[in-house]
Image 1 (cartoon, helix red, strand yellow):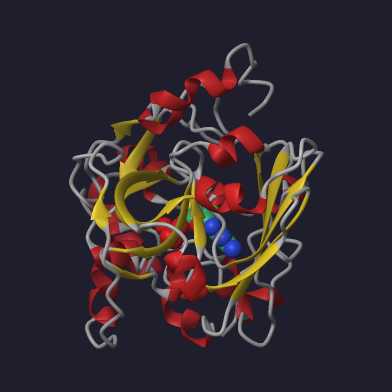
Image 2: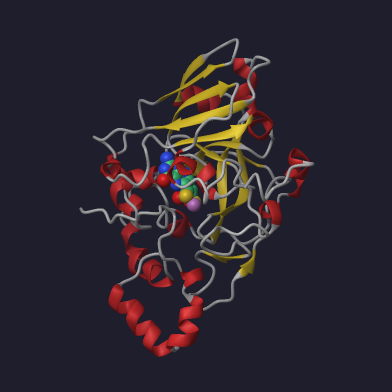
Length: 326
Ligand SMILES: Nc1nc2c(c(=O)[nH]1)N[C@H]1C(S)=C(S)[C@@H](COP(=O)(O)O)O[C@H]1N2
Ligand SMILES: [Mo]
């Protein structure tokens, strides 16, 4: 298939930007135009793609103990939305592309190399990762920088379990995450939207925070490929793009690593990218969000919460100007 080129990256049309237009165009006309353009990233997308998952093979179950203390009690996003409305640019730029294309990703055998400023570098395969610490289910909010959110029951454990095993040296100040970039498996690499591989990073105290999750599953089963199988990061107080998918290398480093989104549009995507309703994206407000799956296209939006509601991380940023370090 052909990939559309979105020159500015994470700015595909999505419903939170549609509402004002709906108001001045008139709802009738607006609906007709939405249908005519068969817009993705909308309630109509959700309707059109319901059936795509009906025939999917049953996924491997992943048992986990519920971590109630770290879970929200908000209504979970339906699985079909969480596994059907994705950002995974290695498999295409539209929300339905990863679900359609990611079957070519080979998730076994798979290894993750943990190296850099550590006393005990390690290479672990997926089975070793699954056994490294007790698996927990944590229901987290995920807030995409584009203005939508989901509530997803992830399966994994705190990344700190893994980082402690490799014994970070005193020089380990940041952690860099590199994800798979294989043209044979990932048709989206043909698009020049990012400088592959997708790289993300955290400060070491952010990476060691108990909320930061190394994730192998969701909804009680192994991750669907489009959600970042076989292993990804989930950092719930940051915009979704910090939660790198399909990780192959974790490197502890002394200096702040470059990141793919920051390289591509530095004014728009900072290194920190904490969810913050008071710091707008240069091209749109971050004050509110649309909850995928739960709400219809014309449903009022929700207020976005500071740190996505995860107040327990506030102390990591004491004294920091979060407008400057966005
Ligand atoms: N490797 C890789 N990881 C990625 C992305 C990507 O394009 N490539 N997209 C990010 C973005 S923008 C979001 S919002 C989340 C989406 O995760 P989900 O599809 O599981 O909801 O994945 C993040 N991780
Ligand atoms: Mo995102």
